[in-house]
Length: 382
Image (cartoon, rainbow, N blue to C red; front, side, top):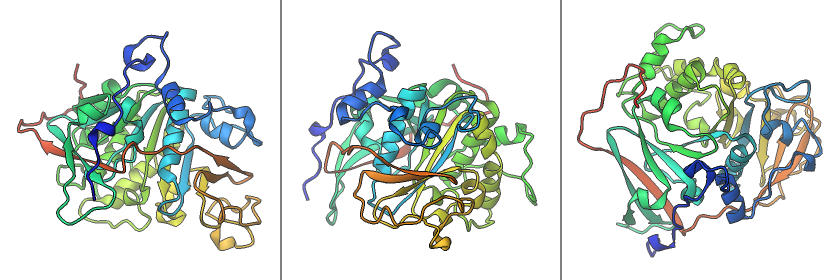
């Protein structure tokens, strides 16, 4: 299989309002809309104001039909159903409609589903590490390593953060697409936890964060720091394959994984109050831990499989028993269509294709840069 051609990647796009801090220029979101043929989000085009308008048009005073603060949504669908492209579309709406700081949870060494947005992407790397990037073909062959590229040539910015507080208060930018790679050293996570007044129900051990933890545990510390210390503005957290972070059957292992899931799960209501929208995605509703799942009021069911319906009560997610769905609406739908629903109503939604610029994937790895990382006490670097 031929390796992807780096020359086919579009150049970073810098002539925007967000990058140049110039209100006369178009926004990052407007650039994405034109590039991918995405319509501007219009709440008037939907049948139910309590569904898509309530999910994507944020307000601090929701009244009876809207969500006050940051809503939560769980996207459920099989592999290949278009979850990643839907999440990209959601990111563009959040940027344009709410001027939200979009945080896309990245995974080192895995597929970079955010690659279509590379021209306006701000990649956030923990200080003390340098990214190594490789373009790999869609179909691999024995011994294939792909093509090494400079991440700085692919995305608009590569920036570095000292700890979770530094990331939230200095590095993340409003109205921009921030791809965040977690810090293997967990800097700032323990400080934030020890400064917090939160107590995990039925905890028999104290939560601890250390460099020995699985790297995805950083997201527990980051989430706690955001809800505890702010900034308290519109933030959209996009977490694909969320079941790998907070599975229902998490073990009470030496890393206290189950306890950390409970700690952040019990903070989910404060996420909403502080304007932090959560867009989680996974394969099955039951795979996500109940403390996270049951605090999410919106569901999005992808195409290709039958949607939950009352004639098959076992298919209805917990807490959604009153949704008036009686028929299979989604088995025969193609990619680009999903079913958005709550306890009281449902409606189909669609989005255009958002293709990758190459036939392949971008894999990003973090390598220690040889300099000793700084010890964090929760302070913010200038």
